[in-house]
Length: 319
Length: 261
Ligand SMILES: Nc1ncnc2c1ncn2[C@@H]1O[C@H](COP(=O)(O)OP(=O)(O)O)[C@@H](O)[C@H]1O
Ligand SMILES: [Mg+2]
Image 1 (cartoon, protein in one colour):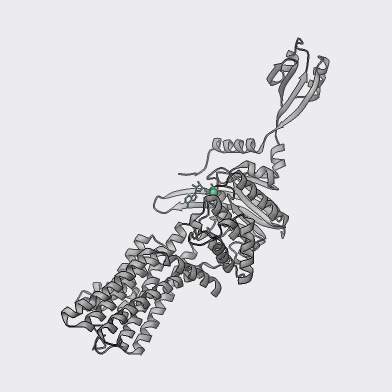
Image 2: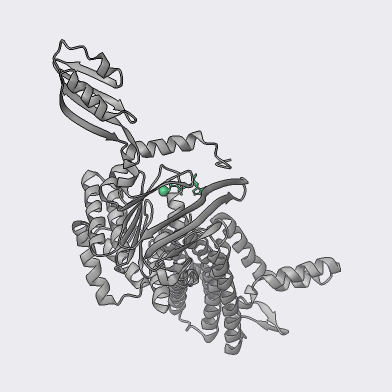
């Protein structure tokens, strides 16, 4: 399949600590695909296996089992790495370099000619908002600035696929928005962006696809819309009805009942017959003000998946 | 390939140039050279003392620096994860190892040159010219230092700086005293003899680079008198190069298999 940027099949990784004789099953058969041109959000709580997956994709660690291709090339592939930009988690770079020197070093490793390196570095430093700090050594940088420097060096090769491990961590709300905008602008340029995060608001707004990973297993996979619309939690209704009216027939079916003056609001369960309820309300002399189906938010779904994983017995685990 | 290796080498040089200890070592060795003028005056052996101090200081501190750089520079890349943004780019891991080594070799070469200049200066003050013997001895010391750096890198490609340091130091000492050990083992039991042989085979023959005061093929060799030929220096250099290439190849192989987490 030529239109896949990343194709991961049944990836497993078990860390072994040589002396402690400890085994950690960080990945337990992870399978997912990332289409070219998409923004793909890889979501999971801390310790879920996001970084392990990404390091495997970047050839930093060898998988224990399974396989993966990047841009159609089987890992590990040097050819693929020419087309990939990578921002490591909580990046740390040679702290005696300036951001321009860091970009230059990256450019050299990609074999980019000197003149092009200089031009690209200047553009990227501007783009990630480090123009004012470009003369400083990286050791003077804050965590957020390092994150930006990391983005700049990751884009030196004008990559087709950009892999970012927690790109928004360490950034303030403005910084997060800037990174979100950067990711969107990369997609507008036709690039594929794969990024991990444990913060859902980052994902809901900008991704085309989301995968939720918990304890080394993929729990959900789809568009953000699909993931959240699968479950209707209930329906919020609000009507106006005379204060004196007896509404027990209406409120019996729902919960979170609130009555204030002539306003009555309550939540009907997911399986309720809304039409029948509305008819009953009309018959009782009520006027419908609002009917809103309540969906699970991505956050709710995420929390539920994490809870599910806690409840289910974990084979192996950190033992 | 060359471009990538060179990029790593230059960056390593910059990294090492920021290590303050190195400047301390330069000051120490240059200071010892100057002090040797005074010592020489007292012993009425000016030139001899100055040369011995200069060459010994060069070998000793050159090798110690080589071990220090070798065990730390590769290790810290992995430890601080600076390597993540590097090996995820289209560079082979062996290119990274070779680049690191060349960067260190560059630093060590600068040190040897500085030490050599200090010796020349002292000799000039004493009114004795630098002889061919001294130049040969310096070149041999340079080969030794570069070989020791490769030994240190080799150990650091799979163990901690502390362990690598101990191993490299042990190798350096054993490599230096090989002929003495061989001589001592001549009278030992066959078992000990075999064990000694094996040990000495797997340790680089660093004694080839420190010949002054020894006998080679029955002839006494001294930097103050009859010294080795340039042919010998060349052969010793090739011997060192063989070890360096072999050790780097092994390091690259071990490094290739590692997970960077
Ligand atoms: N080098 C390592 N050795 C042992 N266990 C590890 C190592 N790196 C990560 N782990 C474990 O693997 C699991 C997944 O970690 P990671 O991939 O970093 O998760 P995430 O990036 O989603 O926070 C965690 O349980 C973590 O403790
Ligand atoms: Mg992580």
